[in-house]
Image 1 (cartoon, rainbow, N blue to C red):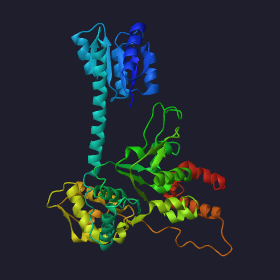
Image 2 (cartoon, helix red, strand yellow):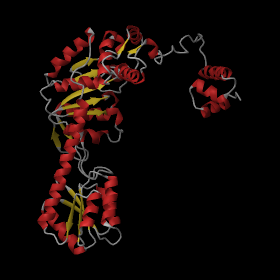
Image 3 (cartoon, rainbow, N blue to C red):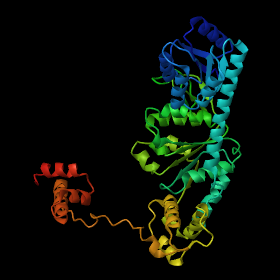
Image 4 (cartoon, rainbow, N blue to C red):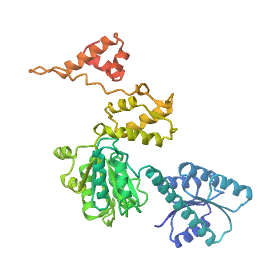
Length: 447
């Protein structure tokens, strides 16, 4: 990869010589003859390295250094000057300069400094990725379970891990779909490679194709340099596509081709790039329903669900709760004598768990932090409230039908009556902003 260097120097002859030397060594170079122009180019091109003179006509090179470090702390900056001093060198290093070179300097000195700066940046980037991966993997080597449903699921997942088949994990939010995906990856022949997790629902629609398949420089506004997509960065490992049911149909077409052909084309390029990955997808949506609604391609569904794994919600495997409580007590480093009383466990088992495992983790953590005694009692769980039945559950709809506006007006009047005609309180009871209530009162002439 040819690294891009931004060279800032108001000495035209020296700038041209330095640019020539950098280009001769295979670097890409953009140049600026002033500090302001240099900062504009930095914003435009996001270079991999900046080389700047200290004495410029409009700015001081140390101010440029400070400005760049605020915007992009990881970008290395090399300072060059004809007025070298120990004090200035210390000041430059204190502000975050990678190196400080005094004029006159030979070509090899600058090239060596550039190589080392870029090498260190690459190592730091790799270290950050590895650290992030270790953090993500911590605690995911096993899934706590005692129920027969989960044991059967884990047995199927274990056998699936040894294959290259695409896996589709379904289940409600908070059931541990990514945890199961990581368990499959860790027990697969690809466990030495990366596992790249992508939340498809979190990526803006206009960027999803670029994020997944990459783009080439200039392919769209803001594409200042080539960028690999997740399909390429996951090469040799596993690509986990979470919330895959949220993908638009046009992206689904390209996804299907990528899975079938094992190759991708970056945005702005027609060149096919081979990828060596295993796909694990997950969703909390009913994809069969999405297919009936023409919102999800049936052929992509069959490609993804070669091995389907459905994680049951926590309310359907209540026998897992005692084991999960012990697991989370250990995770949050509670003292060994801290535990939940039998009645507290029963209270947890009687709860509906709309948030599943994620909600249980939060509840146990809260109990550990706010506990008054070593034994957490049923009363300590009073903050858990079952979701009330829908207030419309018993609403009668006559055979001739009823106007939705009439229902809305009736509830607004009941809300005002219950609030003693206090509009702010009525808005809170109706769970709408006050200005929305005022609009409804005017709309229905209920002033």
